[in-house]
Image: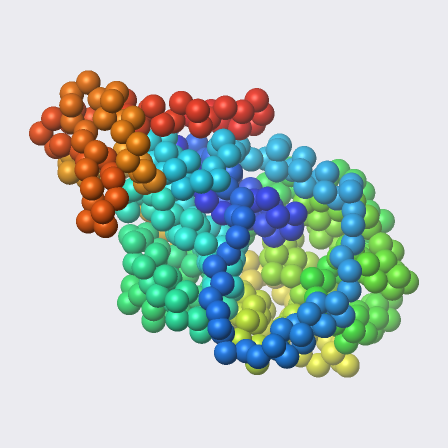
Length: 444
């Protein structure tokens, strides 16, 4: 069985993050591949200064952060996330350095990056563009999101162009992201569905908690802290005569006078939406799971459309694709009927799902079928050579010399006439990499 490594966020205890990576893993496995998630946790981000903003801008941002309220601390919830990830995913050994990531080239037939906002300019990390993958033909982008519609930072914009142009199989999650990347790179970029929409509700049922929640109820899940939004929830409750259950995000959510559900992990999140009568949310994946389970829902924007860092395009995009624009709450003083006809939505969704699965299936088939070109000139021992000379010492064919490169640094140079591609030099570097006792982690 051919092996595919998935590069995306998996460690954030966020419902969308956890559910999208599990969904993509399941879909890849259904297509006939072994799917492993690369255990990479980012430990920094690129920041370019100055950005044209004065110090008062940053003072205001800090004030907004404080005003937004403290987040809920829920130990049971954290444990539920860890259990879900451990049960539903297979991880590689920890890969925190460039060389550890590079060594995966010998272990996998293809690499996928996506989904989630791993391509957001505000958190740019070239690792999520598969910059460590040696063979460009084995790189597949499936539904990564830029989150935003423009990149104002010139350095980040140039780095985006460098990274994106390496892809032969290129797709994103939103139309707006497709336009942005085409403008930057000149490449055509397909638009595909978030992987959570590629699984049927029956498949999600198998991952849902068996816990029963008293019905009927309105489920509220908000990542923003907007008072007008909560006033609208109150009006919805009055109009429908339904009680409200809240998945708390901020500490103040506990004191809103509604039924607060604690200890909600991904399994409970699925079950709460499945059993709800109405869903109110500003979450992208809260919206998607309302669609999956054909729930009447209200969706709210979290950002001002004037904000250059607005992520509203994600919501606008999916509502437009499925003809659900009326579910967006524009006037929060009015309450429209929460019900809609799911049949036309289901028809559109099936068409988009077929297109998305076709793209992923074709991309994986072609990328895993590519024969590695046996060109000794391109043979690379590591991407972090420091000229230590160990590889030259172990080479039985005398194919490796330590020479100065164009920048004057010592570096291993492979003689194509002598190299037999035995990979002893590369295996030497891998011996100490994959050592972990966790049975859910693959030892390559």
